[in-house]
Image 1 (cartoon, rainbow, N blue to C red):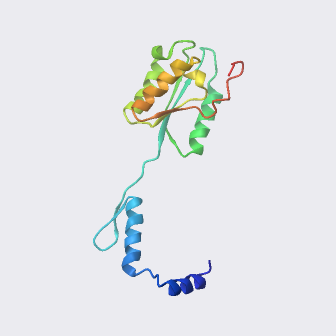
Image 2: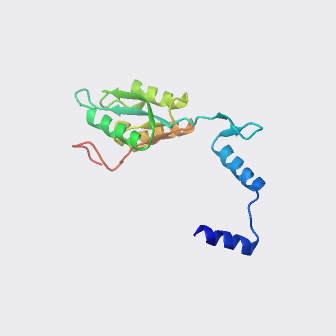
Image 3: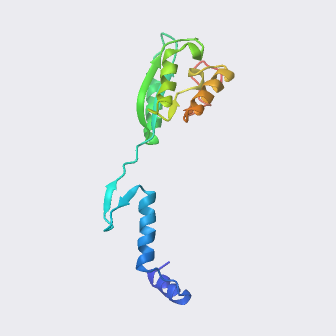
Length: 161
């Protein structure tokens, strides 16, 4: 809509924003953005909004290079603007999730508020057993975070989906 048309329509409908109404709308927008104003209308202080943080958890056999999945997860986090609180690599092989210290540390990051998510390259890095994977996901969700796999269809070479 062209500015002249808007002005003409405002005259026809009798709708005009007063200076007070504009200030009220601006104050609401500032409050929503976390900006508080002093009595003169000048921003008193700017509230910095923290970026979302995740912890990357990778697990593989003792002789597996986790470089490619680490790069995949790092790139994924970067694409969403997530900060990476920690990268935990574990070469635990087929140990159940409850027996892996690295996975415990990743979950603790979320429990302590240092991260909002555990990001991993493949579901099988948590567990190939659906019930075990679901139990870890529920544990993370109970403390306010989530477990995320960028592409749950993609599997490591040689693994069955």
